Length: 509
Image (cartoon, rainbow, N blue to C red; front, side):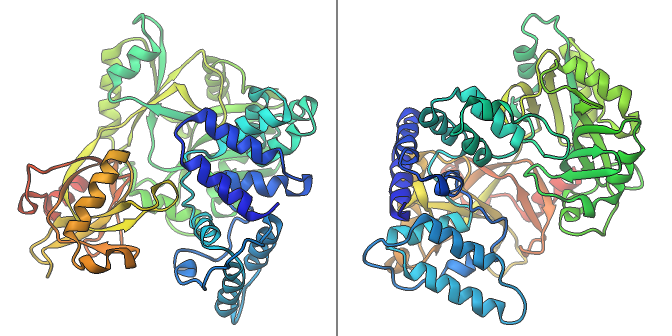
């Protein structure tokens, strides 16, 4: 299969908002795939390369050769090229990788270059990744969608599920929970406050729900089979060697085989959580501040699968296996007032918020449903847009990712950058801001010539964010976590935006 066919499908999928139309486009492509191409095509449709690391980033694909006039690249040739790049190492590797990029991208057309750049940087924006790809696989393979989804969850991979789907329902059914093979974690939806979450999970006001403290740590899944322990992250990366303290706790538990879900968290001497990056740094190295595991779910124990068991049964088994000091703090209640008080205490203790859970629900691996609902306090700031980046994929042609700054009288420009975001923007907002920031561009004549467009610091935007973390990337020493646009504030001037001192007060708070 030519890469051009896949790129055309990706563009068609990005151009429609209809889920049904997206599935139809993907299914049409999958119907033309050869068996040897299947895993690569499914991975690419999901917006990811088959290689975990290629050594490439934005800088490595920012300057490209002239595109080819005609499409000649096949999907497998592209995969083989990235596979070769992933093995480049040692002296001269930078030059070798640059040469490999020039060779691959020089054989690609302009459209193919844009798509290849997007997949390298994790920026394929087509409104259809794993979930919609799974629907297309089920349709083409003529198997139940529920079977494909479950297989993908348990195998930790849509690619593995797709390969099984084309072998038939029996192959899909054969993919079960296997100790030592990571599964996609269950995810939570969101609610604005505890009352709304309680109303959804306990509409009669009498049904008990579990309320867990939401820890701001590393999501971990821990597998033990005898003395063998595996620790993986939310994205299923193996970090066992970097968290020996978690391995030690796992080996101390009174069972031979189990799968636990939880968080690893760095704690200060006072028992309060340390800054998120202190914990997160342990995913990149095996030294640093010690972390403590806190578990909130149990998926298997000594031959007993619990995935489909109701929440109250899994929690009872968890409590029997894991001592209290390694369990996430929990309250079970039907009282909305008690739930709210628990949430307030949890946030006061330095944690992110709470997760409310339906005690009758199974563990829906890989899904974000209504059985788990997270509630976190929302922080907002009025910041100034300092620059904006051109979008790609579905946002091609629009000014999208905005650079955010707070007022700072000590800075020569009067502002200090705190981060970027493209979250929370509607199509109407993208169209408006493209016109607005073109007008504010410092160099209007060259707006289309640069990926980043510097603008006059005049537009105020209200930003919601989940927290702040220390940052050496930005001069202010802080960066916003999970920033998203709430609205543009035309009622405020840049002189009324929040100061860096106000931002720092959120850290103290």
